Length: 599
Image 1 (cartoon, one colour):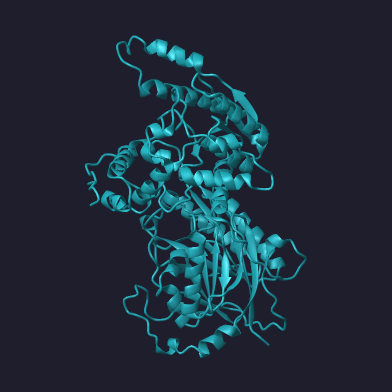
Image 2 (cartoon, rainbow, N blue to C red):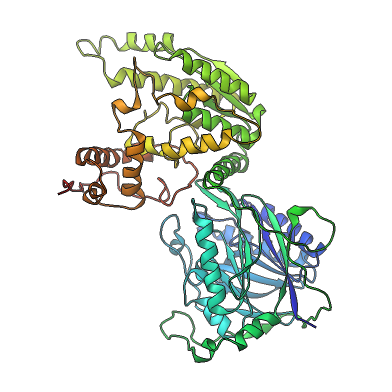
């Protein structure tokens, strides 16, 4: 009879800091796995405290309560075997995975490689582990690793595989960025082939401030071939029966392992970890059907499932919806969003995302026309609100602007009108939105995109006033692609065609266009991506074929507006280099990059 292990991966959405709520969720999903006769169920990295806990991890009472909740989980799972991410404390604190069985924590693994780049700051909080961990569960050798550990060609998984691990369980809190899921899949396939083992990768989903986690849990066999995968951006329980004897057979036919020795400079304990038995071996006389997802809602049994691949625009759009939804729901302060609807593409897409996140009853649009607002803009805003079925308020700003200018008339005497008068309009609109927020408890969503945020094409305390910036990490050119993708969904063209075809304009003065002050977005965005995402030098960007004067102007605008970006609300990260937790530059600094003309 073949040795098999029924493995469950619980792709859940925890809330940072909600220790009891997260423990309750873990117990609920353990019960689901038990009902499907899983031998072992694995949960994401730090799912008990939530990821990232940041400075909550520095509070001793938080760490202590996290352990008490872990013990409560252990007491409530019966004879199941469960892997749970938590904060371990032993003279210092560790990013840890607990292996629980029969009411007890039977083993603890400490994460060995602590990322400290991009949005990660784990070395600020945790001590690194130094040992692998392999446990025998129902006769199967299982190695534990945590997130970053699996990204190294020679790391804890190597130690564990050489110690006999046939299945590597890798628990994760790996945040989303566009295209990241494909990269992860290729990496996990490589590790499975290198270690000649099953690799089970479980990731959380959900939004946490600026971070979004898309899930994408997967199980791959020793050839790097997919066994099963979860859907993206939704909670899921993935179940698969694994043919463990296939690992032994594959290792017999691969002579590489017989020649391998562990390098002494690995940074881990060079001796293999001890194999700790946790339960008696189990041999099952049953066939090996494919995997299933709990999302299938099928009758009891195990059947095939494969995750649907998303288009690039679809995965970014879903990340924005999830990031906004969880920011609001997890904060528990708001139940309605309010958006300034100008009739432009930014505010239109923001409103559609909000409706997809919460429903039309929880979104309010506000039109604040001035003498510079074009007829097509106000009609497009009204048309959008009608399409979405949202409530629409109209608050003209002509009188407040006139009153403000009258108040300032003596101070401004003898000076020509300039950008000051434009910004006054934006600030009055921001003031009105914040008044609605205060009075009704609504969350103001700002509508600026990454192209504008990068070059400071916004007004402090005006269109930057609000609580969450949905499009903060979305370049303008991508924004149009997202709108086009959303309009092609089954519910039809929700964003009016006029919004998509008219030239972008702030409409703060007569006949104004964005291109009066900025290069066309088709030129601006590639320059920004090279300078922001890739840290390319201006001379290198010029060498790509861009005009030196344009590059120089864009670079100076980016560098001069760091102070503005620091004062703007958070927004979901969807690129590899988001403003905020990701790209960190000093506001005041004397460095000015040299701009050289291409030869």
